[in-house]
Structure formats: structure tokens, C-alpha cells
Figure 1 (tube, one colour):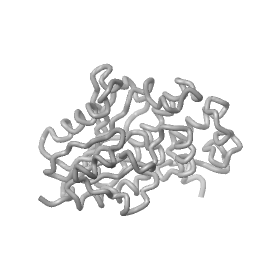
Figure 2 (cartoon, one colour):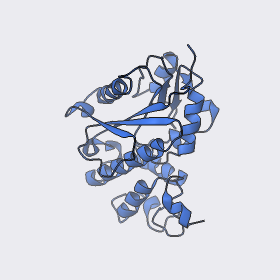
Figure 3 (spheres, one colour):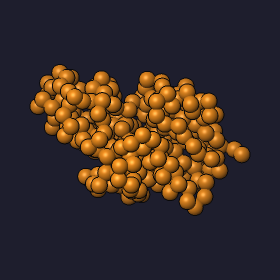
Figure 4 (tube, helix red, strand yellow):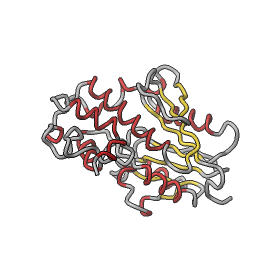
Length: 255
């Protein structure tokens, strides 16, 4: 068996936790309503950037969220979790397994699992990562801390059983997934956001339109760190510092 998506495009599976239960590590400093708003923005920016990638034919979002709150791009499909499944132990694994089953219902197409909290995700980085992954039956990219995983892939015909969660990078290596982290920095693809510090780093990388708008709206005090104040150079609401994410259409009005 050889790696590669070949003539068949990738199907991406994106698990998205119900927003009311998401991003608890941002608390207690960030109120629950603000955490939910950020989780929604992260997911929508991730989905938008992923769907725009060349070579991606389908994006399957597995979620227990009733309303993602925004029209989704063409080619994005929703798979509903059973109530409460995504919140309990093993919820992430169950959501991913459901998505892979839907993705491969008609055959073992190339499939990639992408976390839904990558607000800085650059489409070009994802394209490069999928191209690198196409040379391996199984591949993964570790998160910025090096212990978790933000992307795991299986080429056409390769069985897919990823191992997301704590220490998933080590488990993926042990399971024979090729580690792609050395192929490029993949800064935006590796920067998932679970903490205030990670959000600060993501803002420095540049975030998508929805995250930029949400952070700006919360900059009146719902976010506790001075890095989110309106005068901060990282603040997307600053008119002299528009969001720098490549998928943000407002970039075109700021040369």
C-alpha cells in the first residue's frame, strides 16, 4: 500500500464540543458565556480555513451543538452527537469515530481528523500538511506543546484509529503514525487554544475574522489579561492593526 490522497480528495473530520461545555480551562477568570462565545468563534474560523484548502473535498463537523451560529461554507456537513456523548469520558474519541464512519461509509477514502479549536489556522499551512501527509499511510502533527495532536491522517485504504487526548503525540508515534512536525513549523496548525496564554499566542499569529470580532467584543473586561485591552497591538479591533489571518476578507482593505 502506498500513501497519498491521489485523485481522491481529503475528507476532514472536525469534532466540535458543545460550546456551553467547552474551554473550561479558560475559567474561572473568563465567564462561561464568554468561553462559549470564544469556542464558537474558534470552531467557525477553523472550519472556514479548512474548507478553503485545496485537496479537501468534504468537511464533516461532528458536534452536539444545536446551532453553530453562522452559515457554513458549501461542502461542510454536520453530524449530530447523541445528547451528552461529547461531554463525558471518551466523548472526543466517540465523536471522531462517528465522523470517520460517515467519511468512509462509501469506502476507505483519505481522511484527516482536525481539532476544532485552531483560530489561527492558515489554509496554506493545512494544504502543506496534507500534501506531506499524502506520502504516508498514517501521519500526525503534534500540538504546540508537543504532547497532544491537532491533525491525524490516513491515506486511501489505510485503517484509521487515531488516539486523541492526553499524551496523544506519543501514542500516535507508537501506533506508526509518521510525525510531520519536522517538515515545517506549522505554527498556526499546531496552536490549539485551551488557556489564556495559548489565546495570546494565537492572537500574535493572527486569527480568523470571527475570533477577532469576538475578542474585540470581549475586550471590555470579560477577558482578564491586559493583552486583550483595546490599546494592545494584538487586539483585532484596533483599526491600525486589522486581523492578519489570510482567510479574513478585511485584509484586502488594508494593504
